[in-house]
Image (tube, rainbow, N blue to C red; front, side, top):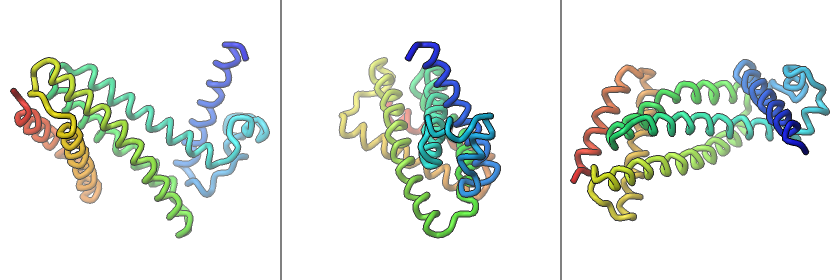
Length: 205
């Protein structure tokens, strides 16, 4: 396959995923068919099957694309910050800012599901969560390692670093859960600033 054909294939896959995501958000996963997705991009169903064999495959690809976009946005925010505290702050703020987008997609997807379908979907969400946590852990490791290399932070043993990252991510997910339960995101910036400041203060030389 030539380079131009690869680019064309990539563009069509992006079209498919964008159309599927919009349909899932508008109608829920259960009500959307392969025909609906094919029609949305102006192609026949047989063309769609060349790229994705089922709606489940499309959903997996949509979620992978969503995760990649979100984590790229977080990584970019981290790169733009200079100090370890600013990088940690950027990590938290960007992740929480993207919360509503991801939450809206999940809420739309499960519309119309029966108990069995909901159970399977929850298992899929758990698997996605584990993948996201793995990527988030790598980003936090990058932030803290950078702080140690620049002597902003004291040296941390690898096993202690793993424990610290677990605690930081647990704090992030706790903040997310409380804000979602209260449907109140007004204290995001204040909470993040306090968490970042206290964390870095405890790790300084």
